[in-house]
Length: 472
Image 1 (tube, rainbow, N blue to C red):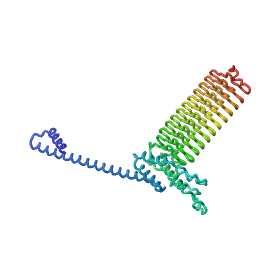
Image 2 (image 1 turned 135 degrees about the vertical axis):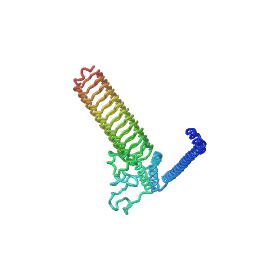
Image 3 (image 1 turned 30 degrees about the vertical axis):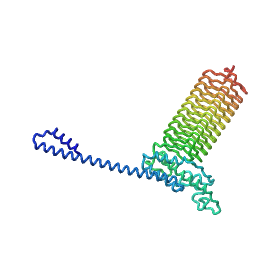
Image 4 (image 1 turned 90 degrees about the vertical axis):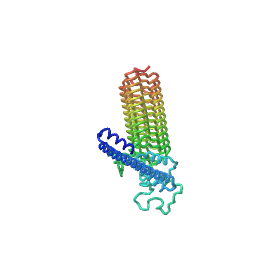
């Protein structure tokens, strides 16, 4: 205050330059008044700042107390208390955006804890009840709406489940609640994304820029469809039941390495903005990735598909690696787009493989691949190298109207069934050295713009007239 007063008096004397003693006295009085006012304002500002700091500290203490209490509740041996802990954490995160990632990390850590799912009751209505999960829609073994059919307890002669199984069932419900909390707050509420929600949540409940780390977690009927996340880590996770990621947006890396999907896995129209890892993943049911978008690299090396695998209209902007993958059922890549290279070396196709109208803008490598059933590449477009050398086709093969803009290699390939290259166009070189055609080989209207080599090729039937000029 003394400094501000002295400064005010000095400024007034220099600016006004009073001539008389009375004027100088008035200037001094005015300076004292101004200095006192400035000092009062400074004192008020300091008091306000101390009050805000005190309130902030009090808020942080309350938040810390709530957080610690909720975490303690998660460690309780009572399911109802654990439920309460999850809802308390959800409330803390909703009211405090700066702590949302921390709360999500705690929920993910809970889901990463060891858990063995209990036997699923094979009764009508159970699957539908499990989809929402948690306390809002608990799994009930009986049909909803029918008195006396709510579960084994309603049956006088029913044997109650063992205590161990009962604990697992209760823990299952807690985990479903945790999964539902993640789903509800990771789904942006837009007009295009609310049709599938029975009770759409307010727009402000969406938590943006969230990372998920569920490495090795056991997840039950997980539904993260239409969610938006940043970096996600599901490596080694076990997905029990069906899993839904349809329409999900992954703005960061998405890792599903060595993940196990016991049921169907839905990734239709999912968008992977960066790299996506599915190497060594196991798909026990159908894998549906139609119209999925892979902006970065897509890794499916040594993946196992026990059911059907749908990649229709999928777009791979980066490289797509499927080396040594195993397709136990059919593999559909109809109208898929590969802007980068596509590697299918040593892949095993146990069912039909369909690549009709697929476009390979980069190189396409199918070296030593095995096709046990029919394979179709009709109207496929290969803008760069197409390499099928040492590949085995046990069923019928169709390359009708395919376009090979770069070099095409079919060296030592084995065609056990019929093969058709009708109206195919080879703009670059085409090598069929030591190829074996055990069935009918059709090359009618095929066009060779570059060099065509059929040295030591063997035909079980008649040699097509189109390629006779290229034989030794």
